[in-house]
Length: 219
Image 1 (cartoon, rainbow, N blue to C red):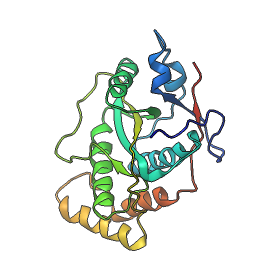
Image 2 (image 1 turned 180 degrees about the horizontal axis):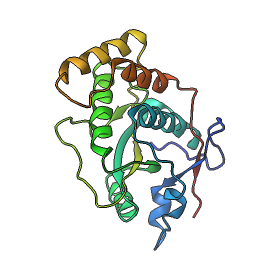
Image 3 (image 1 turned 90 degrees about the horizontal axis):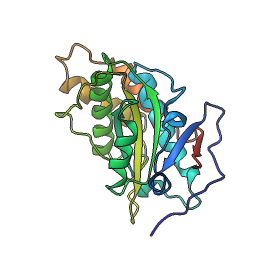
């Protein structure tokens, strides 16, 4: 059962709008200009910026649909470059993903560090049943992605499953438990974020009323 697209709605907070690409529409085009999706993306190198921003994008996905249940949304957070972005999207569309948003640029020096700590955070949220969506894929801590020759772009792709499995969001106690566990598991890491940084990232991600503007891109 599909949920209906909402071609006119957007999320309600006054931040920079971002274009969402609906894959069924994209596949109808022989060629698709990547500029609306990757031009003007801000650059972030800190987990305290990237993690809450990704959460705000996820919170805004609901406004792209008329009938929305966040527990039916399955998220994939990936990285690409300007040269490979459209190819990544076409590949994702073959795996039942339905939409995608590119949300920021980052540096080659920081990408693996950002990915490492984002995976650690999401993995613990999932273990504590405190995700604001049905599921998040690609959270294996032992498998960092490849390095790129050009500036990385981070994107979020999603698919919609039939049944809902919403579990919630991390309360203050869960935030502290996650921070403690990450520090215990990664005590020898030179780039380990402080406990307060981890808690701050989780606290900002928890506020589901804070959303990014998302617009469907019209071909």
